[in-house]
Length: 359
Image (cartoon, rainbow, N blue to C red; front, side, top):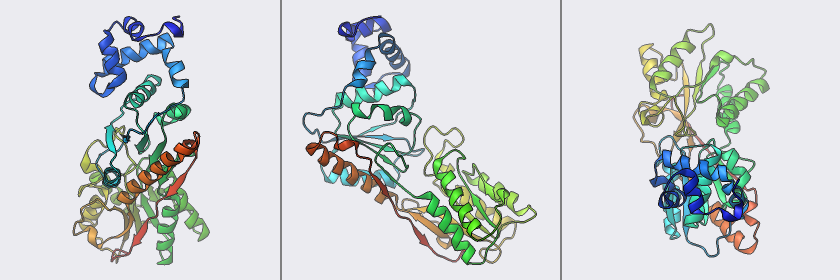
């Protein structure tokens, strides 16, 4: 194997069977190079063990560049989270660089780190979960301060919604209204937010000495047709629900295979609209026969049907702004202490209940 001292762009180029220019482009501007070329370069780096020493280096930005990298993993980018980020960063005269990071193997970690070093970013914001985060955790020292958005993490500073509390509070509210049979329409079974919602829901029922009916939990409910089918299923059970909590899919990322289009989670064709349509077809009156609470975002257009529904409001723009403030605080602290950016800081974004005539 080639020794570390002899590893150069030329060495990597020869190993990959590419030109030095191609290797340079992969390391400096990977988003402008084809996936095939990138993979050949990263395989060469891995074969030569060239990345190991590089990944062990501690990230040092000699002077601030006023540049922030945003890794946007949202299924549909440009939500109100982005609006909050961009408004505040531009007011502080920062330049924003968006990167839709599509891969999750060892070689791809080189891609993020090389890209970050080349542009000398002051910090990184990562919106929503992604497969590469567990691996990236090992290389925090080789990167500037990182803040995660719309996800809870023990390893990284983050801003998040407390879905366990949301699940508990919405269920508890229905219990106070006299409901004993409460259903939930949920997103991806494997998402932490989904698991926390269910835990909060179950805790509320247990504290009320009520049994947990697993048939009242409908998972992988993403879009219009899912909402329709979910209500059909629930209403044909031996004990149909008298109240339904419709969760959101804002935590989904672009890696999702089940729901690749905009209308699947943030449009008038989402699951809550499917549920309302099915209510009309089954001649179910809201709230007389069925009470409904859904999750609202401050970026969504309001439609006549939703204007009448009680909602859990998630302030996404505030979440984006809070993430920027947290990152800027880390950057300020980093000037005074070299290890300041390793602080594990968490910020919970509060939600509010909006009570209308659907409960």
